[in-house]
Structures are given as C-alpha cells and as structure tokens.
Image 1 (cartoon, rainbow, N blue to C red):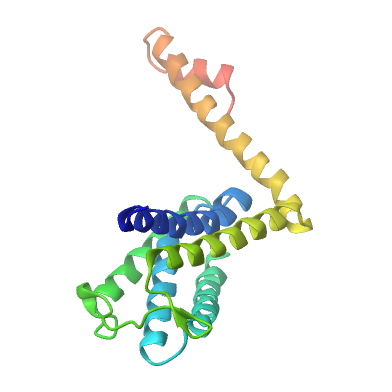
Image 2: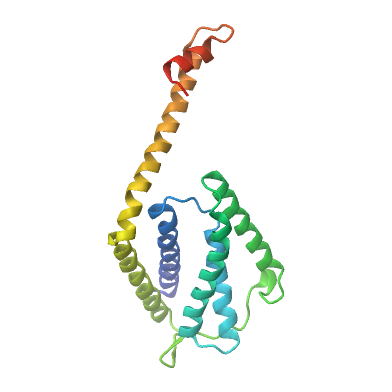
Length: 205
C-alpha cells in the first residue's frame, strides 16, 4: 500500500479511538458533551510538550492521559449541578476556551503548533515508517475496543443501560408530543383560544 493509504488509515484509527471515548459519555452514560475535542487536544499538546522536553513516548503517552483525566475531573465536579442543555452549553464553552488558549499561548506554538517533536520510539526503536505507526494505532484501537466491551458488560455498564433507554424514550415522547400538539393546533378551527384549549384537552401538559 502507498504512504497516502497508510496515512488515511492512521487518521481513521486515531479518530476511531476518539469516537469510542466519546461513546462512553454519550452512548453509555447518556450525557451530551460538546467539548470532547478539547480533551483530545489537551492530551495531544501535553504528550507533545513532554516529548519535546526529553520524556520518552510510553511515559508521555500515559502521563498525558493522567493529566487530561485530572483536567476532566476539574470540569466534571462543577458540572454535576447542571444537566441536559445546560451541560451541553458548559462543555461547548469549555471546548471554545481551550481552543482559544491553544491558539494564543506561546508554549503551544500558537497557530503554527508544536515544532521539534521527536519521533515515536518503542523499545529504543523509532517508528519512522507509516506501516509501523499504523500498527501502533491499530494496537491502541484494539485495546480501546476490548476496554469498551468489558465496560459495557461490567456492573457499571449494565447499570447505565436502563437509564440511557429511559432517557431515549423520554426524548422520543417529548418530540412526538410537540409534533402532535402542533398538528392539532394547525387543524383546529380558528377562534380566540380554541387551538390552545383543544390541545390541552387532548394532550394535557
């Protein structure tokens, strides 16, 4: 395969890992997070900065995950008081703020990004080739898939399932109820107060 094909496969693998992590929040827990890309960026910048300052890839890989998790915890604790649309607004604002910080901090290189990141090396051997890097990404993706499956089958995953199903049914019912009210209002005879009265009789709020 050509270098371009391997590059595309590598990017697909990286974003598949990101999608799996987002599925834990949205798919398993039923929460709406619009700032997930911010943590993706934090992990990337932290690992890059650590490697520029002489830390090896394995250590930078795990340490960046720990630091990103701690920052996520700092956002999660105050977000416990909000839910639904307000949670989405909080996470959206966080994502926008983090993006602006990355673009304006000197340590992140601004719009130019980080320069001089050493190549990824495993067991003392640098991965210069695209096939080697693809193998690394594929290995991490497999670990993520196994972790997701194990989490879904665990006690926590089984506890999440009824909650997500209930929330999905509530959202569906709310959408159908709104559409039905709008239909009855459009079909009812015109008159002062008649559509509202008819709607409340058929579908009490």
